[in-house]
Image: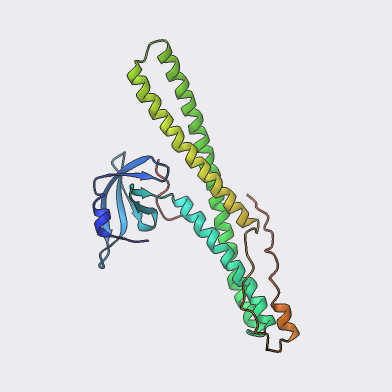
Length: 247
């Protein structure tokens, strides 16, 4: 996705958040194409380093500029591409039965589609394993924040921490816990969606145009007009060349 320059120019030197509401840095600059659309974004992170992001990682709305999760973008891409290629591969069998392509041509295309499909499944397993690591990291950070909150409560209770300081610190911890919980929930949803694809679910049969009634339909075509078989079950075994989720 690309964006016109004017709205994004207004975000220069302003904070940018991730998909879970955390402020991750400040918009530093852009890459603008000759036809005046923004294709890349430069963001200064809290450590003062500036990183470059492609426009597909950017969401612009009334709340400002949001940096999307590259993991989620990859999952969405895989969940679109895997069913599509599977359906194309199955459609070849129908086209052979309808005598619209030769078996030899279908065999050649089967190899092409199956090679692409296997590569996508391999990519999906790699992404799934990465999601597991991210979920574990979120869980650990949520536990750590729970420990931080308990210690804050203790010190406040015995009078070591003033009321104003306690309230500010309490709010900070709770906001971080909220963001982490949202991220973990989102990661778990991504994992389930990817697992369903790898298990062969949600792959709809190919919709082919009906044969006109007045035509004499040969037996082969009648057989071919029936729905395609259910997708095969793939046993789930358990880079993106973009910047990883911001800390």
